[in-house]
Length: 88
Image (cartoon, rainbow, N blue to C red):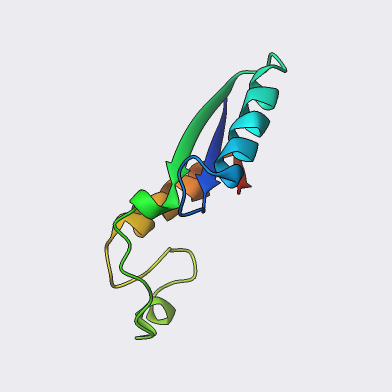
């Protein structure tokens, strides 16, 4: 099973970007291949934003490293494990 993460970056959950993304996802599901799809509205994340502290540059390049442990960090981990990413 291939894991796909679909990210809606629009501030409107049911706007044009979301409609296009959902239509795309329906299209790939209709191919008959086995997909696990996680749909994420970016504006639902508990995201604090970058503070410019450079803490991420102090860690190993193999890690996703931010000193802030917020919703974005967990999403980045899931994105790294996914087989595909779709942005809208």
